[in-house]
Length: 471
Image (cartoon, rainbow, N blue to C red):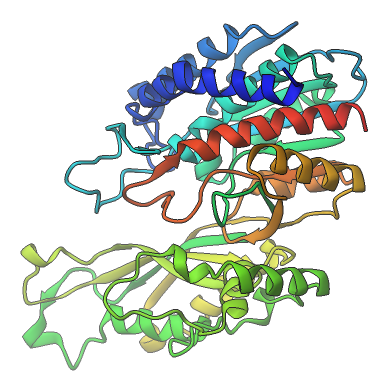
């Protein structure tokens, strides 16, 4: 039996016999990130998930494996696994593997027979919150190492970090990186399992991630609500003022953001890559369109650029507006909108946040009380070019497991950790990948993990670890 066959056999068996049941148990734990559960420590869900993952990882038959849980004061836990070099790999050369265990909140709109905390296997899909984003990462990382060793494949020293604050923007991670900097050293390869894929037929590698600015736009016109018949026409609507303010930020007819601080020049290589990918893999096919809704552009390249290298605004939460069933004839005193702005990968997020805050709060219409509260930012990331050995390793691993060469694309989401690591380790190679393919719907209802894709991705990781050790 070849090494490739040994890796495949081992990975497929452990996924089937152990990881799928483990993920079902994990999905049932509502370990939402701290931003959505400020009482997470008292509720204990995060600690339950940490202990489940820690126990499984610690029991793996991996030579020299150590697993521990760190918890700095006031911060979410971090699972740290270390594995010494194996099979002749260099002990002074480190690979970092990364994932997270915290989850997004429930979200409405789940199918009647599904739910965020109810694991359901339907064909090749495992439904439930967090299985694909990013509960599988710890299990896949440790299994890839285990499978490589079982097949006699060398690897260098490895450190695995599974954090608990990613869905809140990774605010806890810098403190842990600082605390662990002597143990981490200077990785020459970083493997992150928190991204997506455009199809399930090959290994997809993410070449860029967007940055993020968020905050609450609050418009207040009264100290309390008043009869709408008496006040309308005299008291300006807080919702209309909010609309006016958003028009300063975004052209509502086109969706284009208007502040120059939010735009960058797209690198020529990314333009060419995007055009090539968009022609073969139109991104519009990934979304559950309602009725006759159309994309913002009819051009597939423009669509993919809009998702990766253009800034975009989403209103992701509203306060001050009652649900329809309890709405009365009241002119409401205030409107609050949670704004989420995705930024191009190389955009300066600090400058973007300052520009957005100034744009929204300067010279408020009618002298209304306008605030931009809880402003936060996270950096984007643009990957360094792959070294020849890494590109070859990715293609060979993809061909051995999926039957097709690997492909790369820019991702629309944000992983603040990547921007941080890119600055800390400028000489490192980065492989950002994941299982979130068409319809997987991370953060939304009916999130699912495509099981065969996760299995094959795990096999690919084992091969990439070996290629790194023997480069």
